[in-house]
Amino acid sequence: MKSFFKRRSLLLPGLVIVLGMSLLALLAPCLAPYDPDVSHLDFILQAPNAAFPLGTDELGRDILSRMLYGARVSLWVGFVAVGISSGIGIILGLSAGYFRGLTDEIIMRGVDIMLCFPSFFLILAVIAFLDPNLNNIMVVIGFTSWMGVARLVRAETLSLRERDFVAAARVAGAPAWRILLVHILPNAMAPVLVSATLGIAGAILVESSLSFLGLGIQPPTASWGNMLMEGKNVLEIAPWLSLYPGLAILITVLGYNLLGESLRDLLDPRLKRR
Image (cartoon, rainbow, N blue to C red; front, top):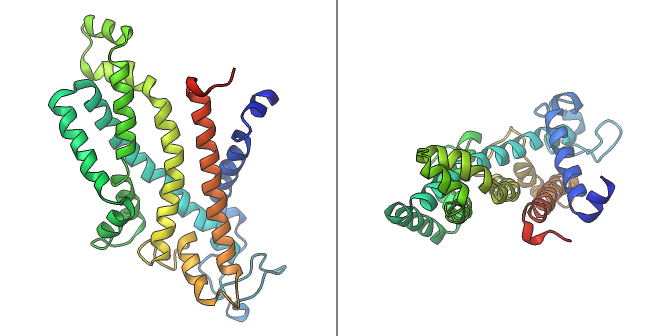
């Protein structure tokens, strides 16, 4: 086990960060010392101290409690958005790669059209017409970030559909849906797992950016992005309001990127070391 992690030096820190942040988010109701939305008017803009380990904001709310509950929002957005985008990408990628012909042309031209628009500005345009709540943000991020997964799955499917085990299943009379779900999809999941891991980091960044711009999670619900937005107004006198959410975003995104890079090295046989 030690040699396994030694050969993959990025895997262990990535796992520690991802599991640690997930555990903090899961246990937020137990770990948070205060209600994240309750104001302590006698302790406005308190620097970190024994009573408030990470200080308080301009409304007297405990930063530590809001950080823990903000982790739940950010990670939930990442998981759900990536689940939506991966589901769409897998379905379209499998269809395009297996059936080819007109189906492939229609799907891939749709991918090309979607890739013409910068994804963040496309998300901004859609969010402008919707209520900026948690559910809408997750759905919009998911429906505007499936193109990479579709291309990966299509490429894998084009290769796998010519393999002997797929040809044998086809000759045996297996229906197309069974060939896709039983024979092709399990063998095409390696790049999808890597893409999903990196996609979670991307979704967290997008949500944080939207919240910072005031188009994401709305106060008083805590998210790391809107905590950054609130902290920028008092940056000179209370830098901890922006420091801790910024570090949380940095560490979490770094953890998922390290994990994604390690999974790529682990699952791609062309990158395995002898």
